[in-house]
Image (cartoon, rainbow, N blue to C red; front, side, top):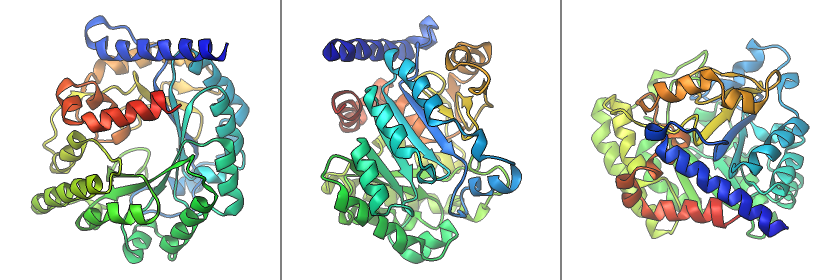
Length: 371
């Protein structure tokens, strides 16, 4: 019975991929996204220069009680898993500030989903590390912006963060029998880009198997109240940045580390220069977001919420006129270069897929076979 259930879910996932790929011509939306990014909480224990989510508590009352409960999340995803949802990425704020995080992970694994947690790593002590491993977590991404303390701490706004995060990662690895893949997420901005070619070796030293780059964005939800223009690369920086990105890819390959696709990395300087051309986006089709207040977004950066999951069902919002209008208006978009939206679209572009065939194979194994 378990085999038939997996076959049923897998068939629906393949059908959803086909509908995403053919949506511009046939106009048939998938019955469920392939991946949902869940902002479990807006609460955060850092004060990052590149993200002002930590200020939410000053601006919004009662944020804890507006979060979706573990029960509501598991009921939601149980239905979506049957219709072809493949993976869930749990982030924040800081997701480890949710005491029910292991319960959520365990529940998601029981319904057959691939589960990733993205964390700043500060709360990774022995108890939490063991709980995450025992819950069945698939991937843990830790945000480390540079391979040196001063720069990382400056960006994260709290002195001593770098050493605490490294201690947390090492503690997690002591409890990890190799069942959880550990990755490093690194911000690409003006202060960090000269150091990114050192990140693969640094990630390897922590036992990570993945290292990914995320370019700085001045957009919701990361910068609702503050923006730091000093983090934006200048045009005169871009040639040097391209060389650093090339070196990063070479270093990652030498160490057999998984990273972003080549097409995505090559687009980062174009994003910062403002010369990025419109490209096909699969936000609202292959991926979507649930924010820390339980609101459903087809895309964080280019559109508002289509409704609240406290008030409407996911199915009603997924098939709503607001969601359909977003899909049609953003078939071609240059509003961001966020990996979570851009890279799934690149996987469905034949030219990019050929360029990034190693990354495509990695993703197929990770999300479809590895489960």
